[in-house]
Amino acid sequence: MKKDAAVTTKKFELQITGPTTAYLKLPTHPGVLRNAKNVTLVDLMGAYKGPYVVFDFDTDGVLVGIEIVGDDENDSEEEADDDLDDSSASS
Image 1: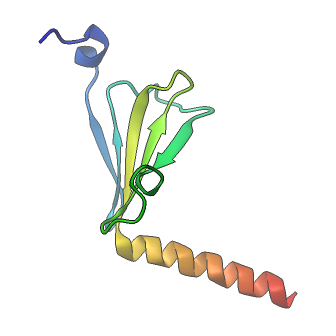
Image 2: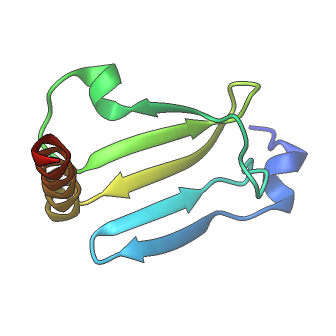
């Protein structure tokens, strides 16, 4: 199998962004991502068990990164959103 030259000149980069959250930059990642399209694994599969996963694509539709959010952090984000909703409703 022939390797793409663009893929072989760059490396995968894993960024640990929280206790159970990480972002994997693929070799195709441009460094700064503008106007990206995000697709969640839920969008592709429907309900499933596991971490919240987001696929990032550049403007040409090339997969450039994958974010994985652990269940405990996803719950915390939802609770924070609920708290914001509650506080704005009482204002």
